[in-house]
Image (cartoon, rainbow, N blue to C red; front, side, top):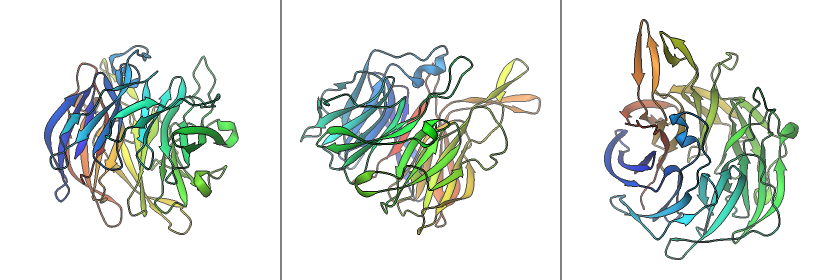
Length: 393
C-alpha cells in the first residue's frame, strides 16, 4: 500500500509492483495537516504526526505559522486491504512534529520538532496505541532546527538531524549538526555531536542507514551534497564524512532554490536514492514560471567494500519539488511525491503541471524506468507533503 498525505487527508493506494501502477482507495482525515508517518515494526499500526503549523501551510502565503494544535494519531492497518482504522486517542505534542519514527523493538515512538528544536518520546502500549510521554531528565542540547530523527539499528542511540538555517539578508547562518544521544527504554542522554567546520555550510536534512551497519548516509539540503559517515560501535559516527558527493548532475550550474531532500538505501544495499528539488521562478508575461533546475531522483551505486557512492543516473520526476519518495520492501518500485503544482513556459504558452505521484520500476542495476504518473488534486493551499509505502504482513 502507498499512503499519500494531501493537507489533512491521508489517501490509500494499492500498488501493483509488477506493472508499477496505483489504484486509489479510501482516505482518512487527520485533525490537521499531516507532517510525517511511520509504520510499527509489526506492520500492524501506522503512526501519523499532524500539526496546524509549519511548511505544509506555507503554500497559502505569508509567514509560516507556528500553530497551536499538534499530535500523533495511531491507526490499525488491515493486513489484507490496508484500510486504516483509528486506534486509541491521539497524543498531544508541544509543537509542530516534523518527523516521526519508532524505536527498533516498537516500544516507543520518537518525534522530532523543528521550532524549538527538540525530541519527544512516547510509550507504545502493548495494544499498539500511543501512551504517555517519557519525560527526559536534565537539559539536552537539541541543536538548531531539528529536521529528522532516526533510531540506530542497535536501538542504543538516537540521531537527531538538525538542519540549522541558511543565511538571509538580515540574519547570519545557523549551524547544522548531527546530535547523537544514547538511548535506553525511552530515555536520552547526550553522546556525540557531528558538526564539520562547526556546522557552518552544513545544512544537513535527512539520514539513512546502510543495511550492512558499516555506513550512514546523509543529505545536505542547501549544499546539494551527499555525505557518507563511518558507523562506529553502538551507533556513533565518524566525526567527519569519509566521502562527499554532489547530488545534482550539473553542480557547476548556479540555480536558486535548488535543494536536496529525502534519501533511501535500496534493501539490497547496492544503491542509494536522493531527491533533488528545484522551485525557483522567474516572471513571464505577468506569471511566475519555473526558472529551471533539477527535480530528479539521483541514483548512486555503492561500493560494497568502501561505502563510496557513484552517481549513475538522474531520473526526471516529471513534476516539481519532490519532498518525499518511497521504495517498497522488495526494492521493485520507487514512488515520488511531487509536492506542488508549477507553471512552466512552453514557448509563448504557459502550462500548469499539477502535483503528482510518479512511479518507477527499479532495475537490477539500480537505475529507474518510468512507468506511470498520477495527478493529485491539491487546491486551497494544500500540498502533497508526504508519501510512504507499507508492505503488508
